[in-house]
Length: 316
Image (cartoon, rainbow, N blue to C red; front, side):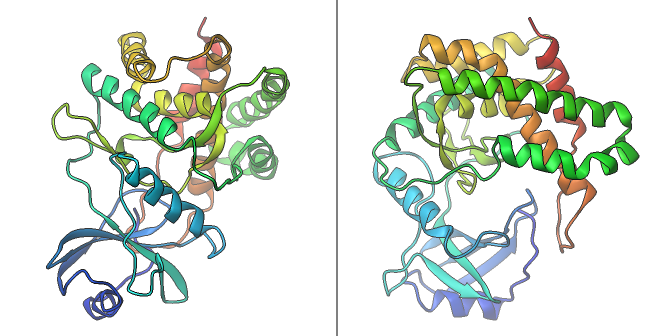
């Protein structure tokens, strides 16, 4: 993640005093993503990831802490949250909340092979099954209403920077998505539960082709499982190249090996691929148009998701 809050060795050593993780040996900022400040922290007990939460409030954070702990306890390869000596998951630093989580083995890849896509799909299905009995609920903070609101607010700025065609495409897709909402409302018992909501290549770790570890659960919420599949397909499988159909099939085969899609989910997936592309195009446009100051900030290219949206709009 990008680093907005800078911590010193003294700061981190002070945080560690409240844990049974040993003394600090080294640390380094992690320069990827755009939401929180993250650091690798090495102690006598191993490597951990320290996160300082830049946007989320103290009221929001317990959901994510308990979710990761729940999934890890059920065998999902995801970070577990370290408890302080007082039993709490969170610490205070620089007027913000933070947490320490276990560091998973493996590394991120820019492009996944067909075999890795199969394993990624299977891992997502495992996450959905493990989270089925998670008792806490969280609504989607970046759903259809949020997207429509952002599009209306940034329309002039998008036209000025990216052209009138981009602004018109945004408005037209928001109108089309309103009809999809009607279809979702009418769907009978569409499977839902905890979804990851942000399964990009920088949130999945591989050691060869082995079952991957999933990280960064801070977009997780309660939603239709097929929406998570759409987000993941756009992020991991769709490259706007000739092998996209095979890559998409590999991911879906892996997912279906643990949780086959229903007929209704399959019928709604094309529209949700458009929805997922629109949602991430809008969020990237917002970050590009209205960047926040940061010491190590990564702004992701909005153009990738404009092109993916156009692809899904024309795909038959």
